[in-house]
Image 1 (cartoon, rainbow, N blue to C red):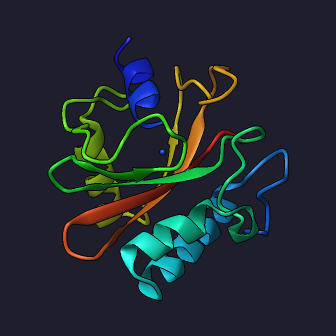
Image 2: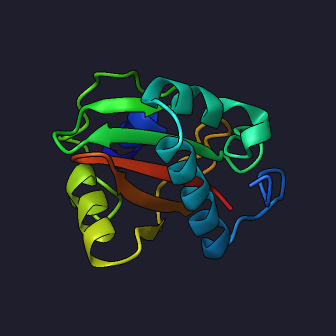
Length: 152
C-alpha cells in the first residue's frame, strides 16, 4: 500500500489545536500561522517554535496535527510527526490518488490555495485509523514547501 508508506515516511491555532475537528478554514489559518513563524525567525528557530504546544501547530494525540516540509527535490526539511527524518527523500512516494506526493503538493500550491483533503487510505500517524487527512500547504523560501496536516 504505497500511501501507508508515505504516511509512515512523512506522517507531516491555538485556534483549534485541541478541537476534535479541524475545518479546511482552520487548516488555512494554521498554515498562515506557520508561514508567519517561518518569515519571522531563522529556519532552525521556526522549526523549534512550531513544535512547541503553545504555537498551536501540534496535537498528535488528537487530530494528528503537525507540520512538515520538504525541498522541491523531495528532501525532507522537518517532520514534526517524527515519521521521517531531515534529509530523507520522499520524491518517489505517492499521494492517495496515485500522483507523486511532492508533485501534488507543488501543483496544489501553484494552482490553488494549497488546501487538500486526501480521501481514502490515509492512516492517522498515532492511532493508525484510516480516514481522510486535511492539508494546507504553501511555498516558503526558494523551492521549499511546508504543510500543516491533520485528521479532522
